[in-house]
Length: 71
Image 1: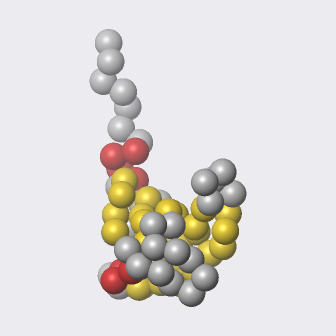
Image 2: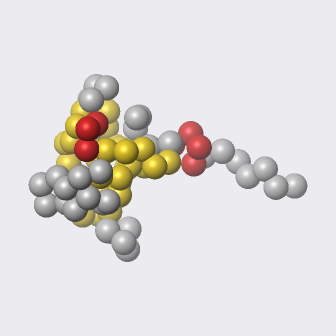
Image 3: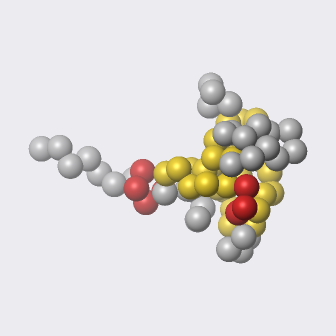
């Protein structure tokens, strides 16, 4: 996982429910990240320092920036 990857919580963490979605805004090391979580309206819920064990990658940043292949 890297900065700007989209992630989802696999289990509850502090006041966040499992399934909450967010974006990695800072990678401290291979196991610890600063993640900004969003609600269904894409409003920021909060920014949390969280370990990799609570997260699953949903969309890698590089995949979300590839240009469309339609011609």
